[in-house]
Length: 452
Image (tube, rainbow, N blue to C red; front, side):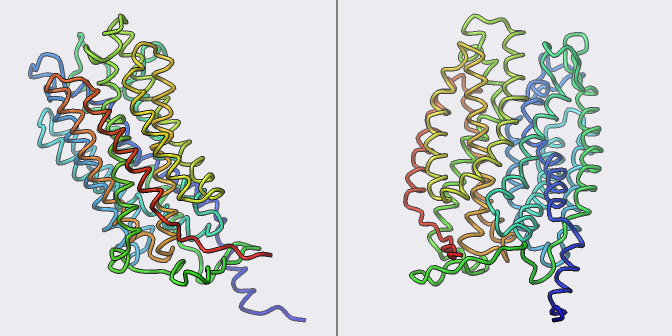
C-alpha cells in the first residue's frame, strides 16, 4: 500500500526545521530585547553626583521617563510588528527590530548628557525596535507548538528576563564579585564618556544577537502539526471558542478588556519595581542605609537584587507559570499569580532590614511578573485563535505600555517629592488584588480536549 503523497510532502516539509530551533532563536532575540529591564543599572550613573560638564545630572523622574518611553514604544510597535509579519514575514520583521534596537543604543552613545537625546534614542528608537521583534518568537513559536502553548510562550520570552541579568552584571556588577563592569567610576564619579561607551557596546551586541536569532524565525508549513497531536474538539456549549478572529472583532469581546486590564496592572506593579529596585535599596529613608547598613553595602544589595534575583526569577517565572497554566488553566493561573504578587508588593517595602529577605521578595516579584508574558499570549491564543496572534496580542500588549508609564513614573515622582516608597507600593498591591478579581471573572475559552 503506497503512502499518500500529501503525507510524504508534509513529512518532508516538517524535516526542514526542528521546531526547538525556533525556541533557541527566540531566546537569542529576547536576550537582546531584555536590555530594557537592565535600565536600573543606568539610573544612578545618569543621575550623577555634581552635575559637572563631565557628568550626567538627570532627575529620578527623567531617568524613569526614558524607561517609560521605551516601554510605551515597545508596546505600540508590537501592533505594527504584528501587521508587518503578515505582509513581510517574521524573519524580516525580527531583523528590522534588531537594527532599530542596536541603532538606538549606538546613537544614544553620541548625544552626551542630553536628556532629550537619550529619550529619543533609547526611549523611542530602541523601544520601537524591541516592539517590532518581541512578538515574532511568540507568534512563530505558538504555531510550531500548538500542543504546548503555555510552555512555549514562556520559553520564547524567557530570554527577555534572563537578558537583564546579563546586561546589568556587564554594566555595573556588585563590588563583592571582584570585577569591574563597563560603567565604572573615575575619580569617584560616573563620567559621560564611560556610560556612553557601555551604550555603544550594547548596541553592537544587540545587532549581532537579534540578527542570528532572526534567521530561524519561519512559520511551519501550511497544515503542519506535531506528530501524534490532534487539535482539541470545540466545546459544543460554546461553539464560538477556539476560532480565529481579527482585532476589530476581538475588541468587541469582554474577554479582551479583562485581559487588557489585568495585563496593565501586572505590568504596572512589576515595572515599578524593575525600574526602581536600586533606587529603593539605596533610598536614605526607606532603603538599607536607614536600617544601619553602609552606603557601599546598600549599593551591593541593590545590584544583587536587581541583577541576579529579580531577572533570573523573571525568566524562570515565564517558563514555570506557562507550564502551570497548561495544567490548571489560564484563569486559575492568573488568579494565583495576582494574589501572590499583591502580597509581595506589600512585603517588599519591609525587606530593607535584611538583605536576604530583600533578595527573596525581589526574586518572587520578578517570578510573578515574568508569568504575565507566558499567560497572556497563551490566553489570547486560546480565546481569539493562534492564526492572528501576532496582531491580536499586540493590541492586548498596549496595556503593558500604559502600565510601564504609570508604574515607574509614580515611583519616580514619589522619590522626587521626598515621599516614602510605601505610597507607590501600596497602590500597586491594591491594584493586584483588583486584577485577581478580574481573573476570577474571566472565563477561559480553551476548547475541551478530545478523549483518546
